[in-house]
Image 1 (cartoon, rainbow, N blue to C red):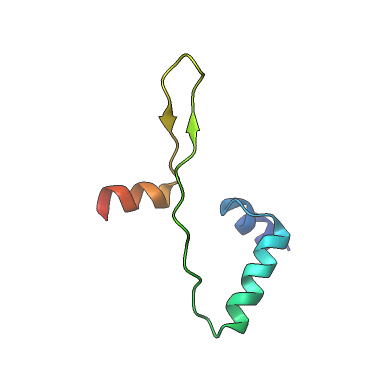
Image 2: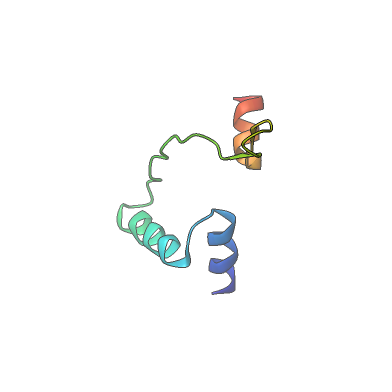
Length: 65
């Protein structure tokens, strides 16, 4: 359970979402689900600059394709 808690937090999912994803993956024969593209989150104030926030995986994708 500790490992599930850590992995679900790392992926930004609730433990329930993580369990559902894992069960779907298992039932689909191990095929990884397609990831939906989304706009990266941003930080900043209304009167200041907007700075995108990327995960390490997203940075790798941007930098190394």
